[in-house]
Length: 286
Image (cartoon, rainbow, N blue to C red; front, side, top):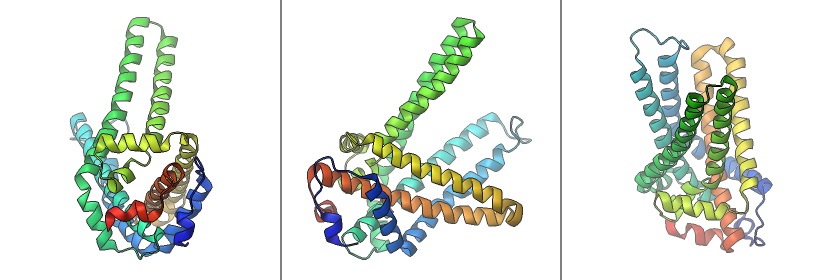
């Protein structure tokens, strides 16, 4: 991949998901050792937290002896916090490494880590704000469906209201997630705050959200299918330890590719909408 290829001006509105997928794969393979190490460092704590939370809640409707509902709620918030912190930090670090590759510069893990650390608190606030806003959506819909259940007195209406609330909730969250897909990139590159990053992402994605939603859906479908296959194939043969190690490795690869996809999407959207090149985008890092 050459600097010229990455910097070729697009026609207004010329944003292609196929190009994002292929360029992201090229960036990932071109810096695989570095990006894989970053991915492992970032996603190992998330997988450990997931393993701990799963063990804490194992047993279905019946909680393990000595475990209260309050402990489960606290554990859930801890897990979500760990996931936000490490996943967004990894995205910031990988973002910098990806941009270096796009400009034909070697990715330096220490430089990328410094960039991530400089933007750590704005990224943390961004993750918390986005998570809270999505939680508010589900909370509002849950309250609305609860009111229907209380006042309707009709079982069919209650079931329909609950199903509708869940469907509408996921639709709204999907829309918000698509709008905010490049918010992390805006936060790191343009040094904006949480609301500024979300607003900037909304403006950049406008007009291309169906394509970006298709990209997100594809990424999550691949992740889900591979994760299920790992569980079905490896757990009976290799047991918990082997399954965990392979899961960490896969999560690191998928997480790195996802973060690179965000970087390439951000780059391509700015090229398509603003006509700038990679050097202008990454000048903030020099």
